[in-house]
Length: 348
Image (cartoon, rainbow, N blue to C red; front, side):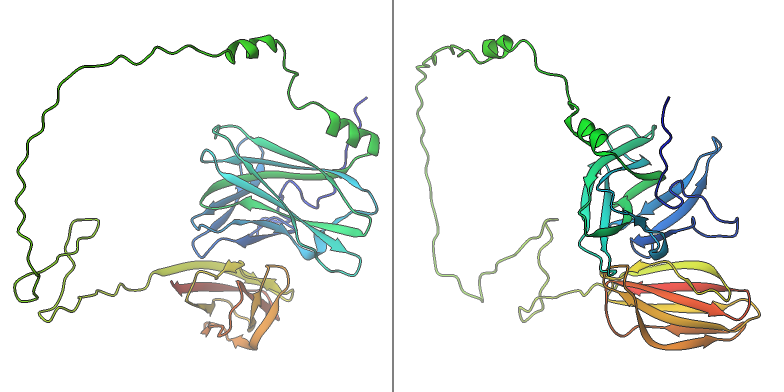
């Protein structure tokens, strides 16, 4: 009889708590840039999941919330599995495991990267056996795509293994043993090559070279420097280079957030490649909203930046953090249910 294994990951199949939720329960988006998107999928076959569309060169993925980490509970041997599908061939998918100590400290993650392969029509499973040290009390999982591309995540599974089963899975041969070793010996036999064939072809070269070598002067001579498109470098009449300064690049994203008495957050943004960015918040509902800017060095630990601002009904305000950390977001709280529209506009 096959034993049923319980998944220790909260909402490992990415269900939404209710239809009005923007994201699956117990999960948060992380990384990417202002143009990256996270979409909830509900396919005709009954499968649900999260689709990540990343246009940035930095990683983009999903991460467990602080209150949904895996309790290790002294179990040392674990099996972690990711079920996904890449919309493009040969994409780099990652899995990060953040160990958590008893005092709440988070250690450096265990990082695993794997290639999706060339088949974009079928779901792929990545399985990893891990050992957990005795001092580790919990794990926090993050997974996603390392760079540009589209990734669909369907399931994350983690469950403990008894030591006997763990050893049996480790010692299981990955590939069948090699047979017919003598055939390799045949290949390695030296091959006799034909000796070079001499060609007795007479060669007679005659040339006449005339060079006019003289001293170069600024009044009579000039030098042109060409770029990759064979266009000479432009200069003024006095010989100074003419330089054209290109303008700033512009990025923009818009999201709508439902706010109530429970604190909620905007999408986490990786602002490390942006020279300047600002948030604009428009209150579309009837209730007063409190807005607080937050920055983080790692996407987990957050600092409140500046004073909390009020957004009156049908009013718009701007939030522009003056200090820098890699990740940025906004927190919202209201006395009653209301809706916000949030713009993020940036120059790079």
